[in-house]
Length: 542
Image (cartoon, rainbow, N blue to C red):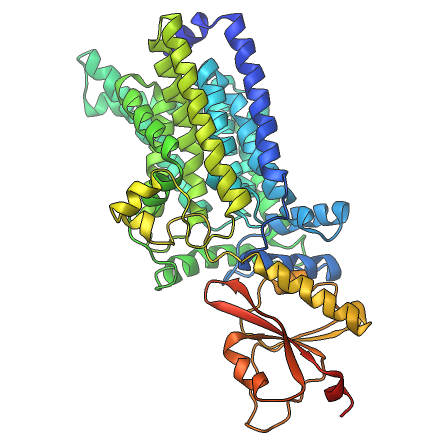
């Protein structure tokens, strides 16, 4: 009898029902955390750029994959559907990341036979309330789609190996296809998954043979070949899966059969990403992600470490694979000098799963009812802490670029640990300040005073302006010059009555009559201040 079968046989009907109810409630919480006040956080610079491509696709029907600077086409085509349904608003753009963020939690139900009655809701809670998984589910970027498809590969592959049902192979094929059409880093995640499968199989076989005192290299290879043959799909299933993957790849990278160069540009993107990500921008030390996890995902860190110990001691092949997936992904992204906090999504998901495993194993060690009640109280307390941290990060300090929120913050600051004193250790990363929305409101007030509304001419002189194009999308006459020069005493030849300038351009306007600033400076993001200038009526008559 396997470990999984023993665990399932000891679970009562009440435990299974209670687990299902709690899991359902957690899914509701996951949806609420991702969709509640989804517009409260101003668009990030990257969201603004993505919105530009989406609006161009919506207006002209044209999209061409660019391997130099941008990720795959999946997000844009999905967002186009939401745009048609909801209109041009924040919900339409952030709808799919939020939905896939919640679906990632729901997908754990397919692994309930491995996670158990306690492990399933605990893993779901860890995902639903993870500050990082919530934060990037509320951004119009590719990361939560990428994380969801990665988990889809794991669920599809493992469930197909267990059941041989074609539906799971379909899930696997779609997940692989959409993963590769979402981001070029699909190569990294896929390689880690393959290596994790091999490592788990070799470890499990070696352990079994050593217990039987018949370990040898030849015996291990023989067992490995036998196991591989037993899980490989049949020829017709393999061809069907390949057709699904190829169809998705061609359909999206060819821009719906209109840009065939996109099919080869994907491979170019891998080379460009590998060669250019070594520049000094976004370069962080090896322990960067560890610092963020220590600061903001402490329950996941502790749970993963405990889960790893249980896996080494008694974990079956599935859990050996999950442990190898978790560690392998974390190492792969930590070894790359180029690091941004949203890449952490790829290993927060398996960390939540293995934390659920640890919770299940500890519960099985608690035979007395009193101990189980104490254990339940501990889990509830940790859930409250997770809820609190996630709420603060996502609904209160969503634009705190100093990243002052975190577990053990006062202790970390007192000990001057780098994650607690370096503002780059956190999920808020060059985030647009909420002051930007005040600038947009001030601009609307001025256009209303001028009486021309969205037909008012606006001149954006600041070289830094993203994501303003999204917020100014309804205005018909907006010029993004990215610069402004004028000689002393020279009249500014700007036809538009409104100008958005950077603080460094202040001297150009302050030295000339006819222009006045509105409400001082507005913070776009750290180090970038914008000023709204309005031309006086007296200047208009000249």
